Length: 158
Ligand SMILES: [Zn+2]
Image 1: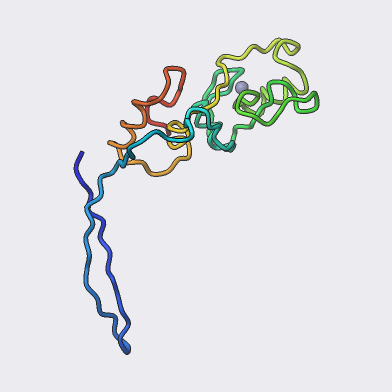
Image 2: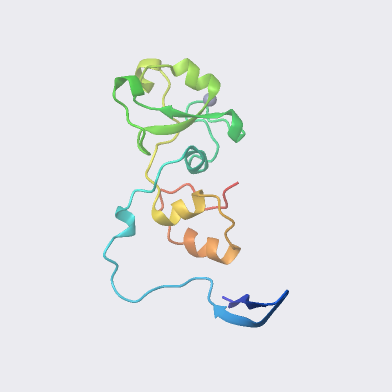
């Protein structure tokens, strides 16, 4: 991968004028550290957010299987919140308003609405992609190559 120079300008204010020298630091886009990490990143559960949930589920309703715009989607508890279902990656899926309203406070079995895909906990690599930051194409490829097969984020997320 090409190295990417980071440029900065060290400035010092002298009177009313800024004067300084430009410095350039060569930084590789991916930095790995030697040694064993104390934490296995695959054991770390990423923080939940609704936008990351929608991206994990590829903007697709878990009940009707249709894709929607983000503003039309809702977080849906598989086991209803009123019945002890948690606000967790494994109990939440993306749903459209119509399906969410139809399912109401029932389990998928009770409502006769089976899930068209299963929830899962994203890995830290996937979480980085789900956060929706601007990720360079080569870094995206590096992260995507480290996703488990169960991940739905192997291709570019929109
Ligand atoms: Zn739906």
